[in-house]
Image (cartoon, rainbow, N blue to C red; front, side):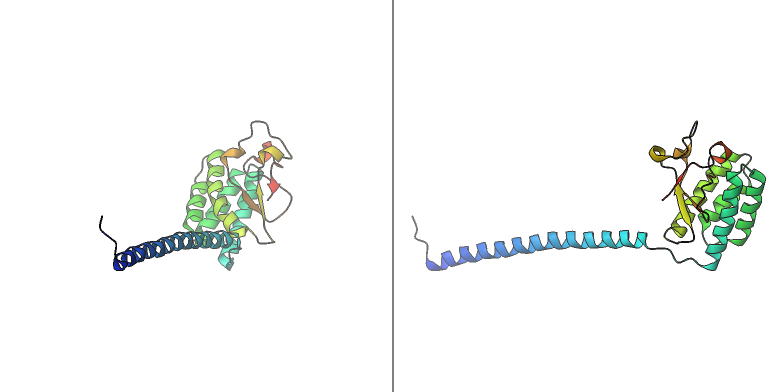
Length: 182
């Protein structure tokens, strides 16, 4: 058996130390990466909770959106279509809103009009959330104050109102008070 010299032990000890340093760096890299991911996720969540700054065209759009909502809540397709035409001609900032308003203006019945309004509502909710002058309303099936016959709210999105008195644009006269302020 060959004797290990002091130089050989020293080399082996150095290799072990280098390995330990690399392990610490690896651990630091893993935890550092995880920390960065958590921070980015938190920033995204916080940003999504902050109110969107509304421009004057956005406010004008929400006013026209409100007139469409009121018309649909009263089952008045003609008025909803006229309001949608006015919205399309004056608001080009958000393509999804304009495209949905155009589809609503060409709808041949309340059902496709409400489907188009649902698409508009997704954008309207993003714009109006956390602004005190608007109410975001949605149907909470398990807490509904006006249980509907043949409820179809699972098909639709939340919506925006400027008045706290609920008037459901998706259920119309069949169940006008279905919904809760969120």
